[in-house]
Length: 536
Ligand code: TNX
Image 1: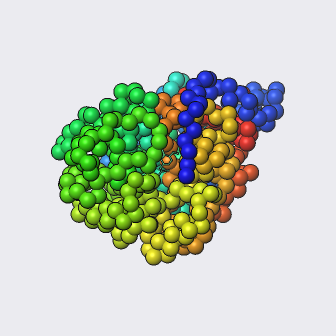
Image 2: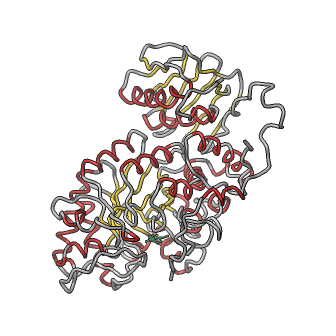
């Protein structure tokens, strides 16, 4: 059994912790800074590590005449404008986006026939007159743009005009992901996060080619999405949060706004309605959902495992049908997450019966179900994904249950809590977060292989990885940032980069180079002593 650490509701300056962690490794020997133009970032020194990078030839320089040449397609234009939007403030250049063909400038090209790139891959060729990104689909172009961005100096990320030069090292990168599922989860139930805060996190995760945003939309402490047929879920069930604050919920229009923002950054939103446990907010909103017909009070603590939908009542399935129908109708993505974790107040028999009835509802509305790995203790539907969140202390029997499901065809998303949980403290002094799975320093979070992690699970059952961020102890953007950075880029790299690139000593150098970028973006992050951050 887990225990949540509730004692320290912390909130002193995060900087205190950070200051202790600064490394003394300097990028440039002192006294030489001004002497020469800094060399551009070596080709391929980005996160996630590209599948292949062959440096060579002269660098490309963005200057006042640079144009962004895009194919005549909506996707290419949209991504071209996005890139211009990132670089105009810092470079001060016009960076006109044009579909005039030409051999110079930054070129974004869709080549649908180039099968070697896959659905998400891209090629980036940089030389003296041009940098060309070629991809089969919008996703690849967008990822190529992220790669391009990380080759520029950190100052390119600032919102005010900076001194160049804006060089991209010469050579060719060919890149595509190891896994198709590269997720991040935000728990908007324990604490509610406004649309703007969600967008800010979306921008940050998209730097690292994350392609799934899992939103944990309901839990004991709050229901966060408007459902027209059951309006009290959001209006009442969403009216508070951990600690007793006012909570909130997304209207359908706001939820769609999040989806559009995510989708422009190649992220698929995966909504989660956690069932049959973690449902106090729903049970408090509608008395009829309770077996005894009595609505419990709203809940603002952090215990888990005390609530359950009433598996025996028909109204429960009317409720589930309505919620999934409305959710599916506003969700363009493939998946709906039905939770299924920690249903400690539901008997095993009821749990299995419930999952057998609910999974077909997801299918009926054209979606594929994802459940936390407890779903493998029931009968996972064909095509369903199970999300593994065990850790070192998880019993062999439980692991085996998941591995056996994988052998029988259930695909897995890996979120080992003592590696991938962004809400675990880095160490005993971390002012935010929980520690039930132990402390998770940056190296520990990165240093594992999804392909071999779960003994007995076939390598091809692994669909990818996800970094969940539970929010019992966090409610501000700076809290998200401090917990997710620098760990999220590591999980993103495990999801994207070939296993052959996995090497902590090399990774930590690329990671250190992200620090100044996060500074330039005004982000908070944990200055782990394991990372050789450049001195200022
Ligand atoms: C476990 S992970 C939970 C959540 C908590 C989290 C805190 C999972 C499926 N359930 O309810 O928020 O631990 O780390």
